[in-house]
Image 1 (tube, rainbow, N blue to C red):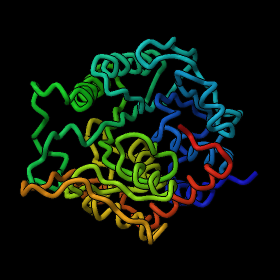
Image 2: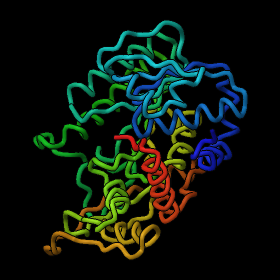
Image 3: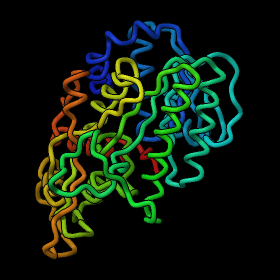
Length: 341
């Protein structure tokens, strides 16, 4: 059976083909391999493995191998994949060397996320890692004032240490430090990607992701609902482009040198909702719950100049096309009654 993501995966391979030679025959260890980011990395890794006959293999850490196998049987059944059951904070270290490590697991719980990073770093140290990619977040910058947006990697701001709602961001900051310090101490390279917002297949429809929520509403026949006033600014990188960015950062990025990963093209939440409807179901109404109160809208938009100048990275798939592909992919999944929950 053909892979419905084949065009996207060919797109990833076209932009990363020259990177894979250096990892021929290597083993990768991946946490978060069954989430949105990790699934795209796994899909694109296995696609490159088959197309280029790389002979790579990957161990994916997951709390529930059976659930992953049910959701993505083509990935779980691939002979290059081994599913390791365990929690990221306490998993048993698998035997053998792992030259490449990707730490993409995150729960939003400060203690668990820091403990998980310590455990992954222990694996990297004891299993001969050469390069480790940590997927951090643009949340590390805290609330960025309008005059500092789009935000660069050198922005010195951060969420207040007394903000009890900032556990996710605080954990990412601590984990970036742990990765950089352990890498220097133990002699491997730590690569850091600060992720922003995305569209595409596998993005959850039932969590706090605007693009996912709007596609869910459209698949249900509408209306598209905005719970706030629709004025905050975000930017959205398509998932296949994200995979290109992350593989490029892992293989070619500078150690302990964060890269923003996202789109530099800002849109408001209301504009996103209207665009999602326009490119999928144009007659669907958009409902906005609140009127603007006059305060400056929050902006969560990266400056991606570093990644573009130094690594040649940019968005290739437009926001319109990304929303369209996401809608039709989920529509196909719904038709076959296999939408991931």
